[in-house]
Amino acid sequence: MVNRQRLSEEFLRQAAIDSPSYHEAEMAEYLKDRFQRLGGSIEFDDAGGKIGSDTNNMIIRLPGEKAGDPLLLSVHMDTVTPAKNVTPVLQAGIITSAGETILGADDKSGIVEIIEAIEVLKERKIPHVPLEVVITICEEQGLLGAKHLDFARLKAKQGVALDTTGMDIVINRAPAANRIKADIFGLEAHAGICPEQGISAIEIAGRAIARMPLGRIDEETTANIGKIEGGLASNIVPRRVSLWGEVRSHNLDKLRLQTELIVKALEEEVDRAKIKLNGEIKNASMALELLEDFPLMQVLDDAPILQLIQAAGESLNRPQQIRAAGGGSDANIYNGQGIAMVILATGMSKVHTIHEQVSVEDMAKVSELLIEIIRRA
Ligand SMILES: [Zn+2]
Picture 1 (tube, rainbow, N blue to C red):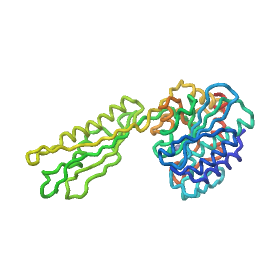
Picture 2: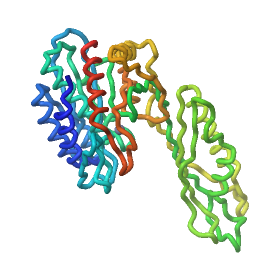
Picture 3: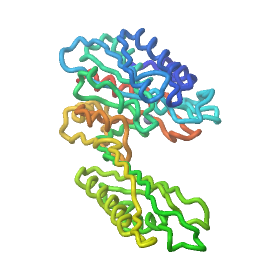
Picture 4: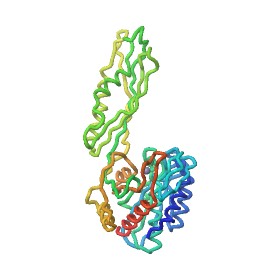
């Protein structure tokens, strides 16, 4: 059913259009035209202006012959870098870049698989429910496109994102994450002449970090202080230090608790650091920013979307492996908005490197699975 030649040509065309995050406009123009030719009606939201991209999230609607809620298909059009003058090379059925850049199979393999599936549905006149296809911008920049997506435009209650490595893998769970930024302020003083007149922000940070549970907390939870910056010179008691950290968990109570432990360690050590200067008490202080980075993704095993995908996989004799992920993706944002979305593997591998690759055969197989999923929806 799937036309491997058409699919392969489609991928080579898309891969040759550079679309790094924030600069997806040319890709968006191409996709608009491509999906229009497939009978889709195209809308753009206004996310780009808010996040500094030269285009917007794209929403494509395809009418269906079957009644029912639309099925949502989600991919992203941006890529990581280096992505200047990407030259895709097809050799023995495997597509790579020429070696200087990424390939962009993340996530163009997913886009191409959706296009080929729609081509087949049309060609074979296979009846299906209406489809909503969302192609986001700036996914690789902390899910910025999805975070600013105009969800009021979507009717679908469940969907499939095509955006993970491997084959015949379905991700149904991913952690929620909080981000923490703390600026600690002490008091500057000459480190050799009068250190007792200073409060070292670095020392406060050091004490606080030593108290924080970090790394793998349990099978569901991780915590990290990933960046620290501060101080001016070895002979100055440092006035300021900034810390950046995160907590992730598959369990929202644990996420909250772990975040609180980090904040408590910081607050208590900042409180304790005080000196008496000319009869006056001098305190350290802190500016804290807490950000919910992305919400939890948790699609239960008996959710209709998972049962649908498993049934489709079994009918093709390709049982799907259901797995949890450690990172966040656009699917977290959809789930946070009440849309049951799981992630399907697209066949891509070695993503975010110049060795990124995908095979035509694997993309064809994912398209076949997608056709089966859409047909059964
Ligand atoms: Zn991706």
